[in-house]
Length: 114
Length: 115
Image (cartoon, rainbow over the protein chains, first blue to last red):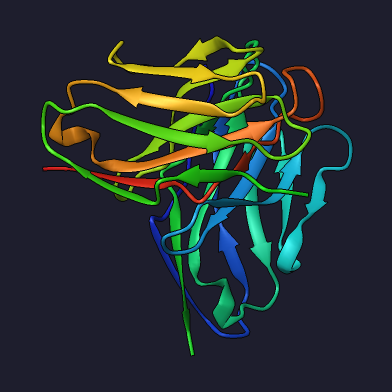
């Protein structure tokens, strides 16, 4: 069974500073990994995904993530935080059964300090 | 391209009642998954529908049931509502299992409050 652990339920960074949101996964097969963002009172929006190939993946809004198999990690980064980045971020791993369900972490709330 | 839509936006029910939530999938998608997101938690997989049949189920009791229609839209039904059913219910559409990377596209959700 797959699982995801997101370290840090709340992260605060200053505007213009580096954003680093941590995600570790557990999977018995090569994982497909995703980061989603959720703004208040909205659904989830896909930021980026890792399937196979290049381990550094770039997403929308300047975010990127690096898949590190040896560390079972898929941390999300952004070089310079904007106020509009304040939201809840979820890391997810795709199931390897027929339904490809997503298993999510508990989320990290990102606050941007002006 | 039309995104995933859900109705209603908000719903208030009392314990023991039944509720039906609706979802229209994104254009070109024939698979619908439902998730429950309790306050402060990540979404939890309820079940998935593909070709109008249930294609996998999470750890939810049988009083959670669903349907998928020929136009790929879907319903989530919950009977005998309990207080713990209060949550945001998210619908996600995707390509058929095995096609693409399995990324799912989410609707805005239905906020269910059980009193």
